[in-house]
Image (cartoon, rainbow, N blue to C red):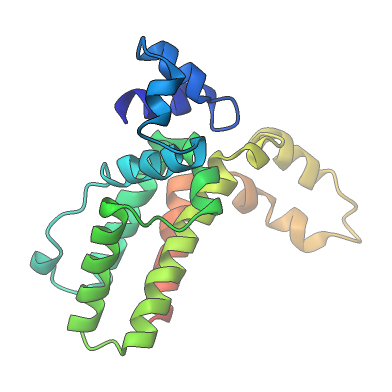
Amino acid sequence: MTVALRLVDDVGVQTFSLRMLAEALESGTATLYRHFASKDELMVHVVDRVLGEVEVCELDGIATWQEAITSVAEALYATLRRHPHVLPLLVAQVPVGPNGLTHRERVLRLLLGHGFPVDLAARAFTAVGHYVIGFAVQQLGTASAGPDAPQLLAFYRGLDPVAYPATISAAEGLTTVPFEEEFRFGLALLVVGLN
């Protein structure tokens, strides 16, 4: 999986092929097809390999569930920043490999242990996961190729002040907050909303 992940990191999911992987492994595609029925099946393992890199401290040692869920979300976000080409795979599939299941189990167990009803624990887990992945997709995915912050700031400031006075007054805040700070702000709002 290490070589497959390296190739996905280098060229992206769309360009990646089993032939490319076979060449990198100095093997044949027929050999790979003995282990994986398709590229899609291999990508399930690549996603799980990435989730295995999520460095989560021992959740039982963290004082509150809010700190624990924040720690898990920040660790996932840091991992996704290292592997942005894997994001389309997380949008297209629910991770069900061993690492994905282990993380899900740990977080759900933590929430249930802090008195969350089962339905709320499930929804909280899903909401936080979707927030992290969605934020990463917007920041790092192919759709993020828009104007950079100085261009966007200049654009906002150049708008018609009669039609867009609020946007003009908020232009700096809309364009200059670092992504990490924006991520933590949104995550904090979500966690507070779970109380």
